[in-house]
Amino acid sequence: MMAAVNPQTEPRSRTLSIHVVTWNVASAAPPPDLSDLLQLNNLNLNLDVYVIGLQEMNCGIVSLLSDTAFEDPWSSFFMDVLSPLSFVKVSSVRMQGLLLLIFAKYEHLPFIQILSTKSTPTGLLGYWGNKGGVNIFLKLYGYYVSIINCHLPPHMANNDQRLEHFDRILETQNFEAQDIPNILDHDLILWFGDMNFRIEDFGLHFVRESIKNQCYSDLWEKDQDCWQRGPCLSLQLGIAKRHDPLLREFQEGPLLFPPTYKFDKNSNNYDTSEKKRKPAWTDRILWRLKRQPQLGLHTPALPAPHFALSLRSYISHMTYSISDHKPVTSTFDLELKPLVSSPRVTLLPEGRRTEETDMLISCSPTADFLSSPWDWIGLYKVGLRHINDYVSYVWVRDNQVSFGDGLNQVYIDVSAIPATEDEFLLFYYSNSRQSVVGVSKPFKIRPRSLEEDLLDEAQPQM
Image (cartoon, rainbow, N blue to C red):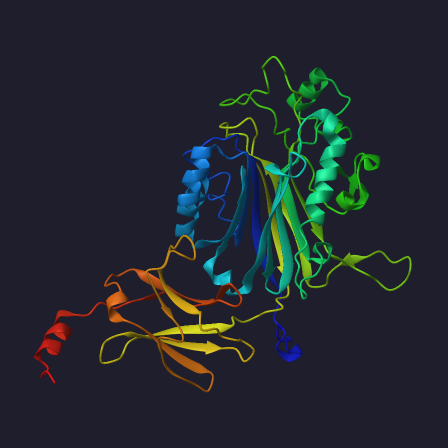
């Protein structure tokens, strides 16, 4: 159970910047540079979390077998780019061509608990994963958050089927655990992907002329899944009669960018093939905040207190042409009052202080933390890619040298300690929580000097 927050020490609000990416990559390999997509050159963002969803990754039998044995090319690319910036891959889930990745700065890891991952196939009557959704369900600073990447059925005539799949994905994302609420009771749902909604009624020439003149508002009301900016900046459904109650609960930013489908590959030209498909906003990013019931029959429900999401940007990235889709990103500011304000375990490297020159690590768990025989501490170089990217690790119980009064000491054998000038981190991994519950500050390991080696050699042998 989560410890109650002491009102006298109630944590202050903090803001997390979350960057969400959705892109149907049409089986293409990563391009050489994704700086614009990841906003790496925007120094004003100071991002905390990346949420990346891809659709139509290469899922041929050779690629799937290779990706099972090794990291897929896209995951490896994102890790290579983000790990030097202190981002660690927290979790991922894949279903055929659908991939969902979450990266966070390592300082946030003790406050992120991955509760579950899930896949919902909807292709071929629910037996094939070429369409459907993948979900990562987590607790973020004590709040329940669900993240869903989806690929819905294509073609103009299949709007009812798209809505049916939307509902099916949402309804199958509940997790069977006594203390986990229904997904509709989660504090935040981020839902994005290739939703395949199309622009109805308008002809191809009118649509292309509207895009050329940047008159996107002329197309909004005919988009099958569009929210418009109405009075008081409230979001309204463009064609409410075509939508179900679940979909209406989600919000979306204004579509101030060109439709992102369909393009000729390796160009910025809309489809010039014989089919000449009508451009459409198929790639979307939605969100839903939990609504709190209010007193009074006619008082509208409001978002949960101390938990607010604001949209900073909602844009497409037209420079990428490896696919017939353009990627879309949203950057959010999530303001919250942490329900968990301190890590479950505080780690402090004490240096090489035993006669055998092993490294001692002090561990201070909180009073409510339940350790497990399978808990371990990993030693990492700063710039790690994911949780398994350790230099060395030790089982806490097996390598414990002292404990008591809320302070435990664990050692790492000197043979497992690299003699380099790199900076390192320590992670405490809790088996029962299946997540990192403690992270040390960066530190350097001082290599033994020649004088120390000579002094040891000069000591009489017992």
